[in-house]
Amino acid sequence: MARKKTLHSNQPAKKRFKPEPYYFITPAIALLILFAVLPILIALVISFTDMDLRGITDWSNISFIGLENYRVLLSDPIFWTSLYNTFFYVIIGVPLVIICSLGAALLLNYGSNKLFQFFRVIYYMPAITNIVAIAVIWGFLYNVSYGLFNQILGFLHSGPVLWLEDPTIAKLSLIILAVWKGIGINMLIYLAALQAIPKDYYEAATIDGASRRQQFFKITFPLLGFATFFITVTTLIGWLQFFEEPFVMTQGGPLDGTISIALFIYETGFSYSNFGYAAAASFVLFVIIIIATLIQFKLRKTQEDL
Image (tube, rainbow, N blue to C red; front, side, top):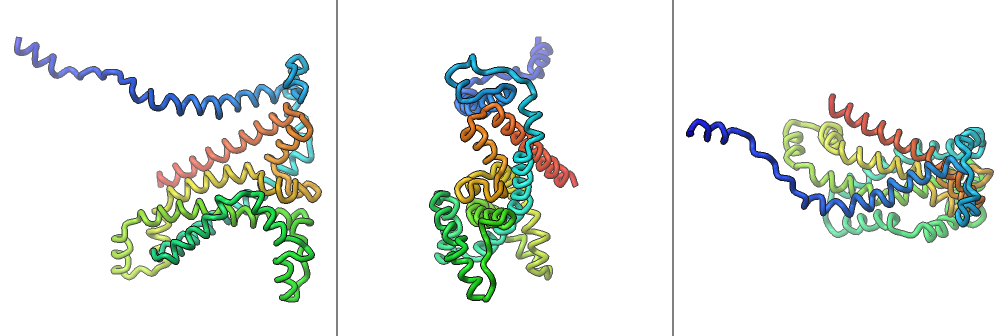
């Protein structure tokens, strides 16, 4: 009997199912399905139809057209222009946001007095300011005749710049505005990551004779890896969905020089009531975002394995 009891005691205990954790995550999962997964599936279905404004009120006006929207989309020059403009925004804007955010965080990390706290608020304020108010102010700054930027250039005996009238310069102007607006949140993330680095590392490096530059590249920058990864992914997704600035400032002009994919989707769907065509474009954007995000995760995993 004693032997049987010993054998029974060595058997692993069965884990009892606990439903309580699922009670807490069910509302979040339900909201995720309702507002994220379901709209994606609906957009995918709509992209295979010719749905327009009449189709919303009467579903009998909707016809299944298969891949026709995608075929027309790939031959649409405006779509390719919006795709080029979006990649232009991403290639220039994302590195600028990361560099400027990191630079501002490094400067503000040197001090903790009220002056530095004041500048933290100043840097963060554009991120919470309404885009319409920002667009009005920057519209005056970019004005060719009496804008502040051209006034400064005139004082320096330089000709006026067509900030929002030339397609390439207009894209760069919107990037400057978006970078200025997007520094604040990323700066706070970097600042929190910088303050989480133990001071002992820097003290040991100073004793060993490491310079500030060496400390940054050997200690600070490697330990900011996860923060940089998070900021890169979120910033990249945000710039792929670049919409507010061109919509408010230029409406996609001049000559479609600032139209982005997101603005193209909006105009196609809500200005021309071609919801099927807009859904096809939105699903293409969705695929681009997924691919870009997966590439970032793959690069992150490769760096961790080194």
